[in-house]
Length: 433
Image 1: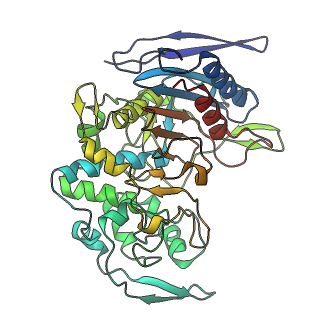
Image 2 (image 1 turned 90 degrees about the horizontal axis):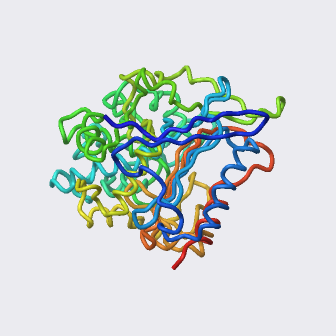
Image 3 (image 1 turned 180 degrees about the horizontal axis):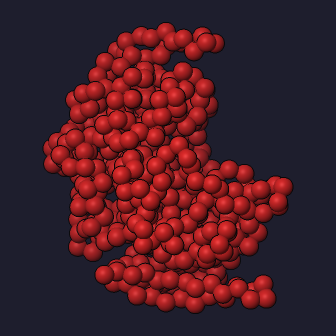
């Protein structure tokens, strides 16, 4: 039975003290230290200090962060609170809504089925999700939301499903009739994956497959395809084929009753009270305590820093960790390689210019040109993030990954630190060649 390193925070006279204990049999157990991981020690101390300052300044309520290189942990630390309402400290084994950081996990599951020969990249999506055959494209619409529909020249392929160029909407943004339909039909609040697919089947595509990049429902469709091809409930497939082999015992689509005290809440800045406040739970979707909630391949998982670090180290190791091989090195390289047509930029809407110097592989964004992207990361670095602020990147040139776990949505403190850029600057300034 695995337990985790915990931190008990004691607050007295405004000074936070901490006590760390370790009791786990799976990596990452403890920090090897900056030098062992190939970093300048003072640089990593500055990184830790910057993350703690963000917590002290109330940029975030609490945080857990981990940096590893060449299989050694340079820093694995925590600061602040998991919940401001009851002053519960953030601990090393706190549980987080990782939202869209679920997507790469779904991608790994689908690639496992690819290795079994159950689908090919040029297959039409409808071969594996027949309900989505024959979708038309919204070519235009009027101010009343009436759409003019046209038939696409071909159906979306699995490759396009994996890199968000298939043409599906999402409903997270956009006031066009397609994205509005996603919200009106409650696609992301579906009862299960069958219900979700039935709703998506009633909504047109946004554009001709392969012609644009648009963040979409495609990874929830991937979860449905995993379920259909494997003959297993999606969550069961992940548990048996990903989580159990990687000893990710804290990762699932819900929070067990005995783990509620470890569940970090989401916070935002309240300008009137001049402090962070805990956000209320959504009432339009099942609770995270409900084991029957939608198994969303696009954004439904709860995980810990320890668990997700193991997932990322498996990627760094090109498919293997602690003697358990999930994928071949070739499959991992496919996942982290840009597959967008003509190097389409990542764009958040049909009208945005997009993010230059970046592409998309299998459920990861890929930095193809760091100079154009304005990034300190190496070429080929792949990354993603979650709606509540969790983020990670993997740099295959340096055999290095970073994970930052926070729970923040909505307004932030005026002048708040840009955690991602500050962390990157400290990390790359500290790398010892």
